[in-house]
Amino acid sequence: MITVYYGMNPTLVWAHARAKEPYNVYEDFLSTNVDGSDKNLETLGYHRCPSFGEEMTNVYGLKSIYDFRYRLTGNPDQPDELKSDYDETFFQRNGIMARCFEQKLFTMGVYYYFFTEEDHLEMSYQHPYLEDNRFTERSILIPGKLDIGVYLRGLDVSYHLREHNLDFQIKQEDTYAYVKFHTKEKIKFKKFLFSPRLIDLDSWMMREKQYKMNHKRLGLKYFYKIFKNNGFKKKVLKEIKENIC
Image 1 (cartoon, helix red, strand yellow):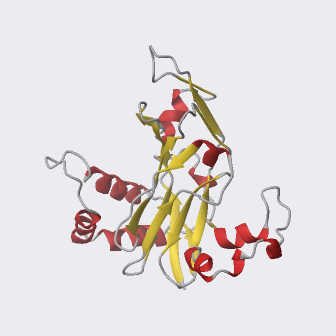
Image 2 (tube, rainbow, N blue to C red):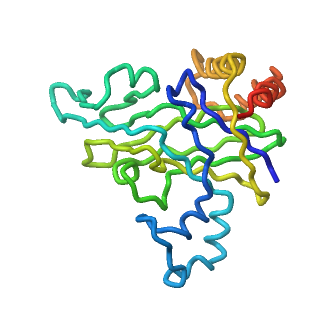
């Protein structure tokens, strides 16, 4: 069994204490319908499919901690104009921003962090392709992959609004992403709180992404090397273990 630590940085997410343990997507999907009723597996058939089972091994769902919605006004004179239930304070506290109005690319903040003592554990960050909710109806999550055994990095909730869609909605408890851990071993989650020292370490690593003269895309190995050469893993694990919930 592999222990995976998870938490949220309070300087990036205002209501970070709401973070819940990721849930097993395979078990949840095969057990209940959207309305909460029990699912009749005999009408599905593919629950016996080995390729489906293989793909869904160690896939976990991440749920929103907020109710949040906004609408682009479609004003040609002000393409960045939008209407929301919240004021600018909410946007600033949670790192919510528009990255490109023309392409309707937005970021809802930086939510979950995952880390492990294992030497290596690759984790994919995926659009929640089995979900039917307000987020998936309107948005497409930007995916990614990283090794959580050698690098601590928050997962941006960045997404495109779907074509011809001008509004965004998500409810607390809506699943907005999947994470897949690339291992056959079982996963055990432990929640931690960010200490002031861990916040500093995270900020230090995030600064390494800034002000580079070489504008070509740098591979993850570039950041893995910085993390290793500065002894970050030992420092990060110390802070995590001292702040387990």
